[in-house]
Image (cartoon, rainbow, N blue to C red; front, side, top):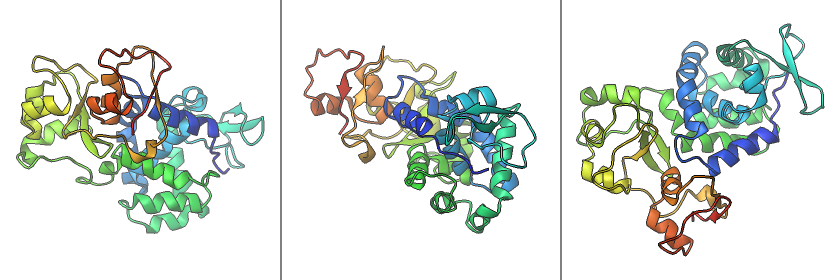
Amino acid sequence: MKPRFLVFFVTFFVVTALFGQSRQSVQWRYIENYKDMAIDQMRRYQIPASITLAQGLCESGAGQSRLAVVAHNHFGIKVGSNWTGPYIIQSDDRPDDRFRKYSTDDESFEDHSKFLRYGQRYRSLFNLKLTDYRGWAHGLQRCGYATNPSYAKMLIDIIERYNLHQFDSSTSGRYRSRTSSASDSDDFYAQHIVYRINKTYMVIAIAGDTWEKISRETGVSVRKLLKYNERPKDSRLAIGDIVYLQKKRTKADESLKGVPHVVQPGESLYDIAQHYAVRLKNIYKLNALDADYVPIPGDLIWLR
């Protein structure tokens, strides 16, 4: 009943993370869609929400895999000897491997929690603190959850890239400006997930957001928000826009060293700069681009 770790799905996650979309990526949509489910499972079964989300992102290709779409199976759990429910067949270790099929996503998250909580193999994990996501990641690899030797590192990278550990406690990972107070900003932070991309905090704009509203709730001036996000004074926010609360970096995360971004259809250099939290002028400089350069799908853009 050991879950598989399909290289295809891992590759999909990495590719979509590196070759992102101009608006909300599939990863951020996945997090927003399933964070409450992961938090509920944490409260009931004492498994860090960050771990559940990171495993779901990995194993389901951010919800895009066939198992997730057809079978609501977000964690790649195979049938096993004690499963009497429906299943689907998919090639993995064998060409006819059987994977559990659920009626809903909730059933998949619940079964994953029970799989860890009541499995002898994972008993030692529950001696760890809920906030010790690194210990959980290494423990899952040590207990044999996946065959990939870099599984723990991959989970940790995902958790830290998307600031998922903020869901493991009421305060971890939450951005607070020095000038903002908890009472003024509770509603804002209840509606906005604070991501941390390339060591830079950001939120994704929702309906009704304006520069002034985000400034008022975070304590970051409109002038700075516009500067951090390289936007003109008369620009307006659209749903799905990335809004950085800090100055972006001169280079992308070190994990992207030697890995270029592949330009997608309709994608601008500004989209790429926002996706990786890199200043636009530095992308021009890193790639020795002319001011009139227009990205063409398939072009390689270096980020550090």
